[in-house]
Amino acid sequence: MNEKILNQIKSLPPLPKSVLEIQRITNDPNSSIADLIKIVKEDPMLTANLLKAANSPLYGFTRQIKNVDQAVSLFGMSTVKGFAISFAIRNSLKFDLSAYGINETKFHDVASQRNAVAVNWFKKDRNKLDILATNSFLIDLGAVVISLILNNDGKSESFKNRLLSGENRDALEKEYIGATTVEVTTEIFKHWNFSDDLIESMSHIDNPQGDYKVESAALLVLKTLIDMIKPFNDESVKKAFELAENYGLDTEALQLAVDLIKG
Image 1 (cartoon, rainbow, N blue to C red):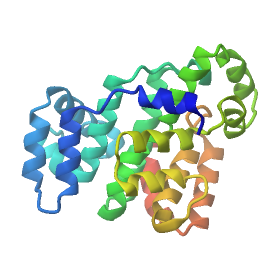
Image 2 (tube, helix red, strand yellow):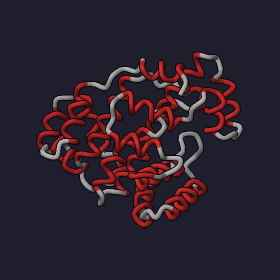
Image 3 (tube, rainbow, N blue to C red):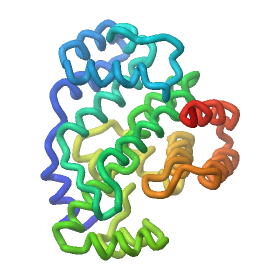
Image 4 (tube, helix red, strand yellow):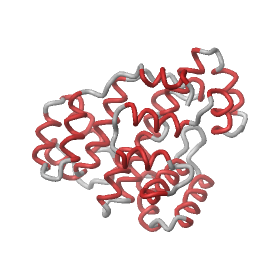
C-alpha cells in the first residue's frame, strides 16, 4: 500500500463515540439487547435511520415498526451494529464517487440492498451475520478514498471513461493507484481498529480462504449480485448463484433474500 493511500486513510475522521460504544456492547457476551437499545436511543439520527430501515420493504417485516425497542429486537445486535457503523460513515465522510460514474445515492442504495440480502440470507446463522451485517454495507468503502485520490490527481475522468467502457475495475485501480477497493477497505478497517474477524473476512473477498472463508465467500456473492456500477440483472444473479454453489452456500435461502429486494 503506497503512502498516498495510507495518508488519505489516516486523514479520515474517527468513528463517533456512540458507534464505539455499540461495538463494545455487541462484542461483550455479557451485554443484552436492553443495553444496546439504551445507546441507540441516545442517538436521535441513528434512531430515525434504524426505524426507516426497519420499515423498508427490503427487510421483509410484515408489520409497521414504531419504536426502537421493536427495531433492535427484530434486527438483533449484530445487524444494529452494522447499521450504526454504516450511518456514521454516511454522516462523516465526503462521498464524491465521480471517478466511478455514480453518485452518493447510488452508492448507499447498493450498500443497503447488499445488507438486506445478507440479513435475510443468514438470519438463522447469527454467528455469520455478526460479520456480514457490517461488512455487507462496506464492501465498496475503499472506492470513496480511491475516487478522492483520482480527483486530486486529475485522473478521475480518464479512469471513469475506461471503467465505463468495460475495462476490469480491479486492474484499473491497480494501474492508477496501486490497490483495489477491497485492499483499501481493509486498510480503512485497520485504521478504525475494527475487530480481526471483520478485517480478515473483508481482506479475502476476492479469494475466500482462512478462518472466515464462508463469510468472505458470502461477501463475494453479494458484491457480484449487486455491483456498484453494473446493473442488477439476470446475468449478475446467475453469476452470484454460481459462486454460492461453488462455495457450498445456502442457495435456497439466498433465493428468498433476492426475491425480497426484487419486490
